[in-house]
Amino acid sequence: MNTTVTPVIMAGGSGTRLWPLSRAGYPKQFLVLGTDPQDHSSLFQQAVSRLTSLKASGTTVGAPLIVGNEDHRFLVLDQLRELGVAPQAVLLEPSGRNTAPALTLAALQATAEGDDPILVMTPADQTVTNPSAFQAALGRAVAAAMDGTIVILGITPDRPETGYGYIRSVQAPAANGEQPVLQFVEKPDAATAARYLAEGGYTWNSGMFVLRASAWLKALAQFRPDIEAATREAWNARKTDQAFVRPDKALFAAIPSESIDYAVMEKCPGSEHAIRMVPLDAGWNDLGAWDAVWQVAQRDGAGNAAQGDAIIRDSRNTLVHATSRLVGAVGLQDVVIVETPDAVLVADRARSQEVKQIVGTLTAQKREEHALHRKVHRPWGWYDSIDHGPRFQVKRIMVKPGASLSLQMHHHRAEHWIVVSGTAEVTNGDKTIILSENQSTYIPLGQTHRLANPGKVPLEIIEVQSGSYLGEDDIVRFEDTYGRS
Image 1 (cartoon, rainbow, N blue to C red):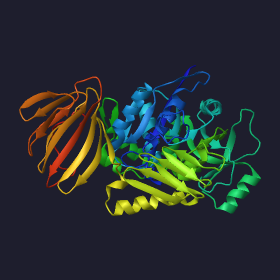
Image 2 (cartoon, rainbow, N blue to C red; image 1 turned 180 degrees about the vertical axis):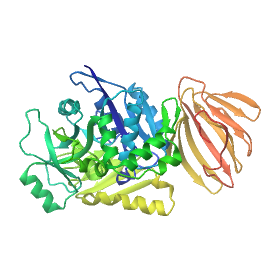
Image 3 (cartoon, rainbow, N blue to C red; image 1 turned 180 degrees about the horizontal axis):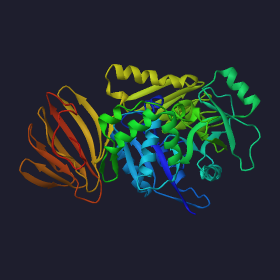
Image 4 (cartoon, one colour; image 1 turned 135 degrees about the horizontal axis):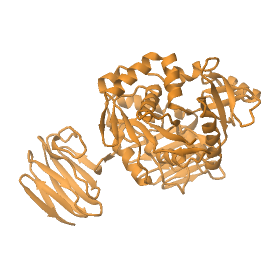
């Protein structure tokens, strides 16, 4: 009997510890972090590729389920389109309620037609350097989950790590490599982590689970019936828009926020719900902070890693990540430098977990740098705010072939558009004109207008805004292809 395997990719994280490269509007899972110079795919794309290429005996791998944030829905579709992968559904969380409700949404979607596939669930922000070892371990996990067993992948530890939770299991593995889980252990201090490593029988909790959809729903209903019932209620009131599935916003917000581990997994050992661990030794890393990026990056003889236009001299074990200009580093040790067009981070590599505190300060001060890059991605393309001052702002705008901005107007600003490359279709009041390279037009304050790309190549323009207020919230939309209000 052939069994369906459904990949489930959790893509809703914010990645605050990888600021300033990762931001709320474009978090780390959608970034190309340069850990492999030959691989230009994002962490999310790598996760999708690893799971959709799974080959396990007696199984068929179905289209993936993506669980993500409403604000990132077009990023998800764009990056899937680049891979040539069509999702079964993109489940959009209207608010963050942690991973237990997220996996429940995936299980409800997977069983909606009466099926009971094996869910292979992974966070979208991990990296693996040995794909063949990963595929072998995942195949063993799928086989173990056939009978309803819950399986977790445990990472073979190579150091006394204090940043991960641990799984305690029996030390003598079964013939097929799987082991009963005896206990889940919280992140330890340094001495305890060293003891775990010396004793053996402990692996890192990868956050990757393999289980039948029904096994998850049954265990959740037993251990946390409040989460199961509340998530099901929000799911039953869902709305569907092509690939997007939206649980009811108010009902979803009422779901208790809880992780998969706390809600179910830590309660499984000793219960009727069998849980086993399959060890994974495949160069895994969750890239939780800049120190983790340094660990998986290619380094020179002095332990230095560089991405972008960087010159490093007389330094050791230092990471420099440059995105828009030359960065020079001299006489440094164990330092992280990350440069973006609007922010620079300099940190002790050992304290890179504390970067999230800077994000907290930016959020408290209501500064945009916590959420947005200077270059902001939109479903129709992107814009880059290249200069601004009193009563003016200059943007570089790219519109994808066949895409268009909303039909809109502004109360407080006028706009000048100059076409740099491609062809622009401009709606300006009751007139529609075509502009080509080096041609321009003027949009008066209060005028209804729209910019579209009718061509087959990207359209780039320079937009000069002038007026008393230039904020992005000064937009009144009349029509929008992407359903934005």
